[in-house]
Image (cartoon, rainbow, N blue to C red):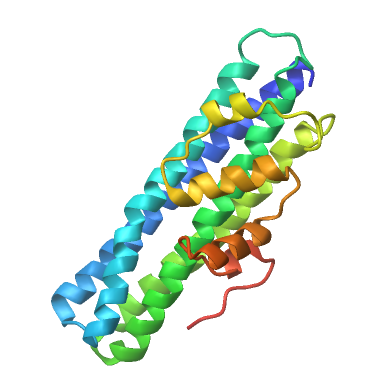
Amino acid sequence: MDEIEIEVLNDLIDDLNRSLTTVVRVAGLNFILIERILNTQGAPLEDETGVIIEHLQRFDLLQQKLEHIKNVNSLIQKDTRSGKPVNSPSDPVIYSLFRLNHLQFEIACADLNKSIEETLNILLLQMKSCISAKIQYKLQHYRFFLAKKVMEINSKFTKALELCSNLSASDVISKEKIQTQSYTSSEAERLVLDEYLRDPLVKYTNIVKSMRDLSVGVPAVDLFLNDISPSVA
């Protein structure tokens, strides 16, 4: 990468981190609204209430995962601004961290979408008559906004990897450095890291399958990560 490409990359990282903050904020507003509905309108069937509460509790994990991604992005910025020569030995690590960050983001958003879809399906099936049209609109608005924002972030990650196009995921990966610069405080994050280190070309859908097989935070393949328009529940 030349100096201009490095500046473009750093601007892109700033944009990525702002977008990640927006996803957390809007997802938080969505779950706050769901909590308010449960508190003011009463609960649907007991078993289904438990499902909703479980999904609400996952928001803290989402927030933690996206914060980890932002922190790794900032580490990449620090490395590119350190004054090292362009195309330095650290470049393959930068590429690998971006690839790993993108995979972590895809898995986190698959889990987010699963939570939102299952929660909305319960609310709009069991409690639709108790929820005003305005609140129903808000729930769908948050859902569609998040879908759009997640697709935008996926596109930005793709652009960041294109800036490192002189590198390849098959380049020698410094596993020790990747491990020390990654955040793996949850079982799902560790699994993503292990799968990536095993195969740098691994697809997010393959990791989802591994999670299903191991019953680790099983996210569904979802509308956020496919180029389709979200359907209205």
